[in-house]
Length: 447
Image (cartoon, rainbow, N blue to C red; front, side):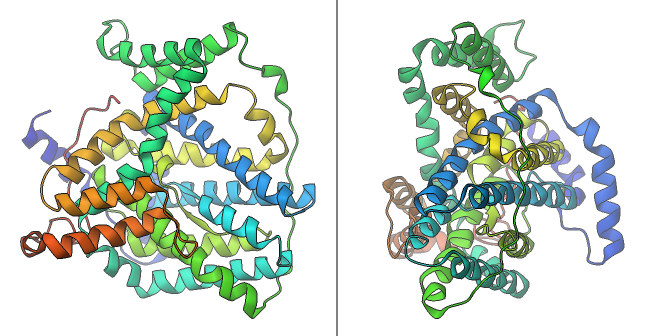
């Protein structure tokens, strides 16, 4: 597609990509319109992206299960925790995607699981749940005030892209690790992915879909897929009456809020921006708070906007720009189904080798990663973007706040020291202005 065609295509879908004017009637009309377009918007490549993102998302649930077990929670509480975070994330994905016609993925903060799991070893469960309520309330206030959006508007896009590229690098690098661990299944999956680019009979199919089918078939044929491990049981979220204490609030509320706003949401917002969308930052912050309050009802920790999963479903493999929202809606349905079947989560993760999940997730991120690197290192703020990338890959944790937040801080400091002229050159549609949005050119839907 030529540049004028790309610009025309983006202009044509601009209204659906923008926030609908306030008031219940316009919102309901937007929801109805986007819901009606859903069957036509979902392409085979998008289905493959949703399945890959869903498979990838199962592993963090094991972290949640381990945290619950280490904290001594009962099996019923653990199942309620897993079911709630999945159902909340799925509901956020469906509602936000239909509301804004963007591939917005709701999730739960993975670093928050580790933080909460540690706190549960010395704090009563009910007091920890009380901090979920407080953190959710703070997130709603931040979203309504517009403070997060004003801060995000001053973050240069290359620095954000450098951070996201650093966060996602280990997931893409997992392709190599997966092939090492399962050479036959992993190797065939990677070969099928690239064959879809060059073999005439396969070039009409999305490479991720070809890789997914090849991986599942090869794992089954080689006896590495345990389909007998699949069990069915319904998870039942349990309501929890919170308790509040100064000690618990001082330990958890601020870190949980920072993990949502400064670690998780910023990744998802950057991934959407890189793909050519203009995410409603304040609304996403408010939605994270509302989702956190809903999760707290059943003893689950803070909701957020996903990073890697958003990058997968917002990437070119999911189809044309104005149709990718259907992929996150499908992913939301899969996540709700996973929540309802929470007791079977560990069984699902045993169906196929972990190495295959790593390979598929990495392959799905190759296209988005190419965009992130291009936007991080293709123009201004090179030093800031590089520093953000390096800090994000380091795994640095300070004051219990994970590396992505500090990557943005370090990148901004570096650019303010040595790249002040780049800040002066910012225009109204440049990185760091207008909500941090810069229109990305539409690219091939293959990836």
